[in-house]
Image (cartoon, rainbow, N blue to C red):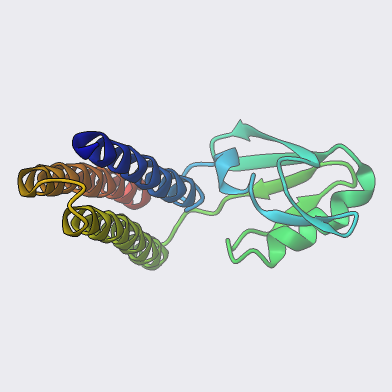
Amino acid sequence: MSTDEIKSLLKDAEARMHGAIQSLTDDLNSIRTGRASPVLIEKLPVEYYGTPTPLMNPASISVPEPRTLTIKPFDGGSLKDIERAIRVSGLGLNPNSDGKVIHLNLPPLTEERRRELVKHMHHRLEEARIAVRNIRRDLHNDIREFEKEKLITEDDLKRGEDDLQKLTDKYIEEIARLGQNKEKDIMEV
């Protein structure tokens, strides 16, 4: 029973840590850089027939120019709702509509706005690190509980703790790498 239980716990920890990284990646993709990207707005919640729906569902989003996004609703009636969602999103974008298509021109980021975005990004990185550490703590407690109940030996406990720490270190490094890359993108003029 011993090492199989620990392997199962480590596999669970890895899946949960990977989920934290995936969530962080999605969040970082939604932080604006100097270039237009559909990822910036595709998950923006839009009231669509009374239900908050990600923008990518009721409309197609394209990038005709490096600093421009176009949004073409599948249903013309949702145009006003999409415009409203963009205005209240906090992204600092002003939608221009011709009645069929919404054009979003991304203004160049000021130095001050870039620093605000980096600060926000660092806050998100810390949340991800905390999530990974909480997963480590939970599993560490489970491994210790197995040892108390004599389901595993002291050696198995030590090995499990070491493996768990290596896994944690791997994901903390991944968070740092993602942060460095995004900061470079944000600060790039």
